[in-house]
Each structure stands twice: as structure tokens, then as C-alpha cells.
Image 1 (cartoon, one colour):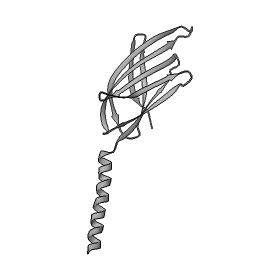
Image 2: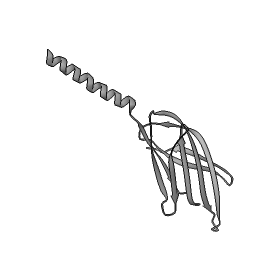
Image 3: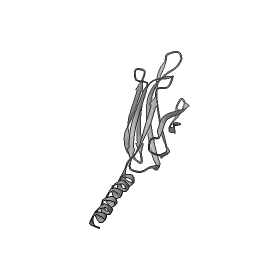
Image 4: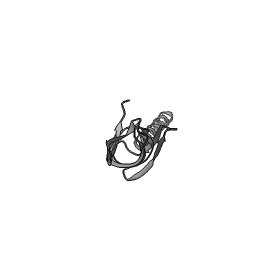
Length: 133
């Protein structure tokens, strides 16, 4: 009988630890950036739910970068992105550009999001776009 009680207590402790880890575990995802064909370099600052989660930097020597992000909870989160870049047109003329964007993402463990840049000239907008698995 004592062995049975000890086994039951040990089982409850193990189940409690597993439950606690699943409830309080982090949700990890990745944000990627790639240098565009008309870009010389690009610097990106990313915030999620009002907190800075990191920076990305790409240039011709390092055309891709990724940021691993951990959040306490999965689900819908707000993001803000700031971007500055040096662009180069087909004749080799360079110009500086900046853009920002806000939106929401549905975060789940293992998801990957890419920095998206749309528009032209002074009407640029930055987004986070979910990549296909």
C-alpha cells in the first residue's frame, strides 16, 4: 500500500512538472531578412508587443540574417518595424531610404517570418510575412 501511494505521488509530481513546462514554456520563432536586388545594405529594428526583440543587418557581403525570438505566449502579437537601407538603381546611383510598418502576427512555435518591403520611392512599407513551412 505504501508503495502504491508513493507511486501515485511520484506520478502526480511528474505530471505537474510536465504541465508546468507546457504552460510556462516559451514560444520560439524566427524572423529572416534577405538583401533585395536593388539594395546595397539594410538595417532593421523589430519590436513585438512594444518590446525591442532585436536587429537584423544585411549587405552584399552578408545577404541574409535571422533573428530568433522567444515570447511567453503563442497567439496574436503586435509588431513594429523600422528599416533603413541604401538603394542602388540600374545606373549605379545610390540613395538612402527608410520605412516603417506595424501589424500583427500569429505566433506559434517554429514559425518563420520574413521582412517584406513594398512600395517605391518615399512610399515604402515594411511587413512581416509568414513563410511557408
